[in-house]
Length: 98
Image 1 (cartoon, rainbow, N blue to C red):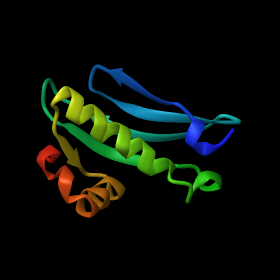
Image 2: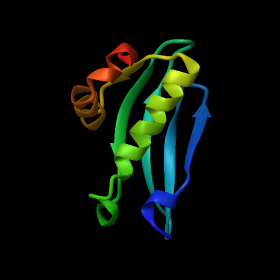
Image 3: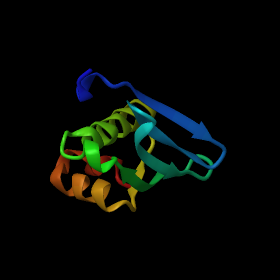
Image 4: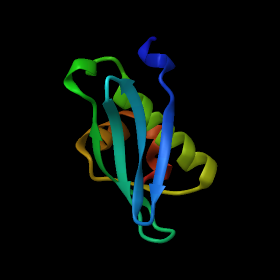
């Protein structure tokens, strides 16, 4: 199975959630966020296991976040350095930044 075929799931709890890709063998890549009420998604962490780095998996997680923000109308506060860097690289996302 290629990395591009791994499904991204969004899991939510009362104070936040995560986007996750289950990579097999118990490994997961995730983008975690916190949220208070209808406030922005505060992205706190993006992580990919070392054996899976360099394959664009973290970028796919961010792309899913961006797609949901556009579809659902929420804003994003990127505290995670990876997501903050992606915002700098994609000027077209600035309207989603909280």
